[in-house]
Image 1 (cartoon, rainbow, N blue to C red):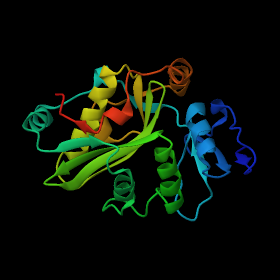
Image 2: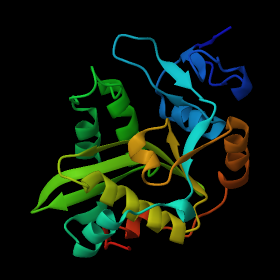
Image 3: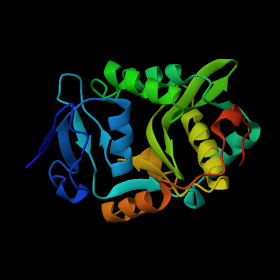
Image 4: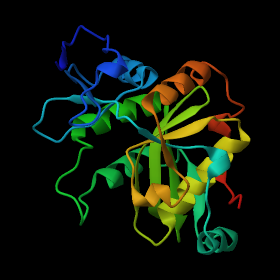
Length: 234
């Protein structure tokens, strides 16, 4: 039976109680209070819903993740990085990035990044938990991504691209930076061909939960405030 959360109940049910169909649906209800969001990611779930739906919380099994050491950079992408076609920055345009990620896509109906979601993650950014990575060309924002950093884990949320390879360059540059800083993994949540091409793979939810226990409270060797401008590392 699906657990319904009240605004005063911040306790998520055990991950193993998530539904098999649809895969990973764990709970519904509650709100997007920053403290609830932090607790959700620490617990192993995340919000994902369409405008007009109740707030839904998910913990799919298996879970798609990318280990920095397994990052795959194709020959063409490596060439793009070496040529430095894009300037890559961190936390220079968080609100622009999340709005771009929420914009309509040719291949999708609507967006799950609702106005309430945007507001909630902007608040997490102001608290120093949510971060954006931006790719620029000729002074214009042409790609990027955003997610949350907790301990030695990065929880990716969404990415966008307005130029070939822009989001991939942002992702690869971030993944390499996280690897150097001792991050254990990047949570990619759901499988996509785009992410698999970069080296992401599926692991059992129980294994993902072990990574949460091991790395959520470890201090990474990375000061986000000092990473405004990132040269390509490939």
